[in-house]
Image (cartoon, rainbow, N blue to C red; front, side, top):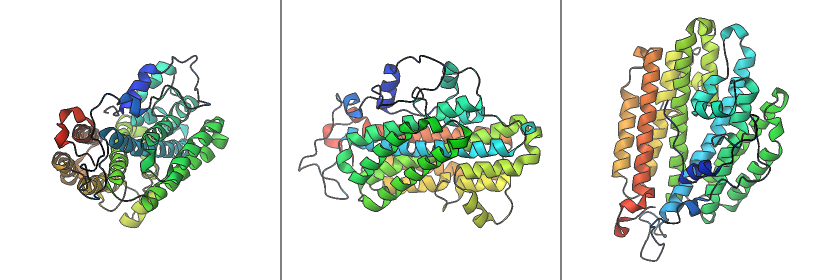
Amino acid sequence: MTNRPMSMSQSQSQSMSPSPSSAGATAPSDPPAAHAEPSVAHADRSVVAADDESRSPSTGGPMLLSRVAEAVYWTGRYLERAEATARLLKVHTELFLDLPKSAGVDWEPLLLVTGGTEAFRDLYREPGEEDVVAFLGIDARNPDSILGSLDRARTNMRTARFLFPRELCEGLNNQYLLAVEECEEAVPRRSRMRWLDSIVAECQRMSGIISGAMNHDEVYAFLRIGRLVERADMTTRVLDVCAATFFHSEDQLRPYADVTWMSVLKSLSAYHTYRRHVQTRVRGADAMAFLLRDPQFPRSVEHCLIEISRSLIELPRHDEPLRVCAEAETMVSDVKIQSLAWEGLHRYADQLQQQLGVLHLCLEEQYFAVEAHAPSELATA
């Protein structure tokens, strides 16, 4: 399982974050001061001035500063991360309650999906239900928690707020503040589902604003690429952990394989669409094929890669990112699903995650690491 990449603001905030005072979860009552503004983190970077001679090739408007383009990209990634984490917690809670204890379902797989195992062990003793839910939902010490992701999304959006519709900026800020205000409802079972549902609903509402109220220009392209990279990464992580869980607990989970795969599909909002598309009971091989390479399902890896390629076409200097994206598409289209044993799926999902990491680094080099380019070559959209 590869580690998740961090934005400059996130890596800086981790080095500045205070040490925890106790092993319990802590939720911020005010916006955490440790989350540094990307504009501060990138203050020493050379960027393109948006003057009359620097025009966007697709819109004719001024081109973005590299640090602003990066803030837009990370806004998309953190928005998607918050929604995906909420879905994971919701579906795993349902699975944990539906299956008997003999099935051996526990909460550690969620830490593996999100890449937070080591950070969790630094703060908690055992991966019990309440501690894992608190860590992934509201713990301010976890940069990938739902509250942490929402806070970083709004921090990055604030850097580029002049590019976003006002209702989107206000909606994200209000969502974060409301989530903090109601964070005590996130852990207890009796109120957890309502809190998680509200997170998902607000993220979906903002997706509608992004799609329907923003110009589909370079800003939209960077925002969309960020969301799609994060979405594809989450799909591979869910498959990776599912493979690891079955590989180590196959005997206990064999009678509940259908229910477990239903949970996997639901965690990615894929269950209903899968049933319409496949029209049979849920089977592991069919579910894997659907989540990996159905070109029409928005959360399949292949669909995400196709849409990333389409968005890249709108940007300058897209040859290298398109090449890396095409390599990932080839990995998805050429794999023989039926031949993947659980151990093979684990290895394959890890390779896909690594390729997505290469794509992220390529985007960073082409559009955000501006020191690598001469000023005359800087044409970040």
